[in-house]
Image (cartoon, rainbow, N blue to C red):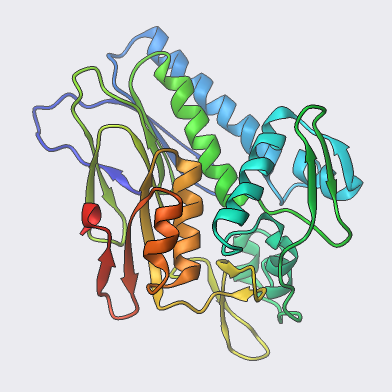
Length: 303
């Protein structure tokens, strides 16, 4: 998780609320004095985050996302429809470097359970399954139809979208920052002073008045294929259906929303350094990438 950096020991610390959700540590910060109202806002935000996470999880067969996979054609909630539409649009803008129909590929490489279970008992990978499956959405009726063989993984983009929604919800009470394992959205403070965030593993401090930060990397959620010894990880190149082989090991982005920053970070990581500037431009994102030798490159804002 990235961390809030306090530039001055005399600066007032925002209210903090920490909990586990979506397989990661979540930190809610509310720039308000302690009161019944602010405490209630933080607890309400936690409850809403858990509710939204349940909509999108692929690890619970009772989630709405898994019920869609089972039914193939289903009237879905406005929340699920919105994120699916965002993901389909991101697939087009990223030229297939991001694709919500990547779930069969994730399962094929062995990421078919929670990561804790995968790490404890990795299995031999199946043959690669490139993405590109058909998804048909009627936003008016909420009807979603999946083509044969198509299954959705909305993990990253849904996580970013949830972070955005929770930040908006908290901002009704006071300026807020939401951090879910490094996926961050912050809202404008009353005095305009920026939030200061240290990005884990990137030797990077970002000052941001409002907006979002996301990081994608191949240095986490890794395991070895027991048959071949090949290292696998969770970042899939949708075009090949295998763990991406990039000259970048991590990418951090800044964008207007966390959903957008998430897609941009993953797309740039899959693209590699040569195509990174073009991909970043498509998402209006500032970016910084780290190579295998620890060298960094990126846009001037994060140089």
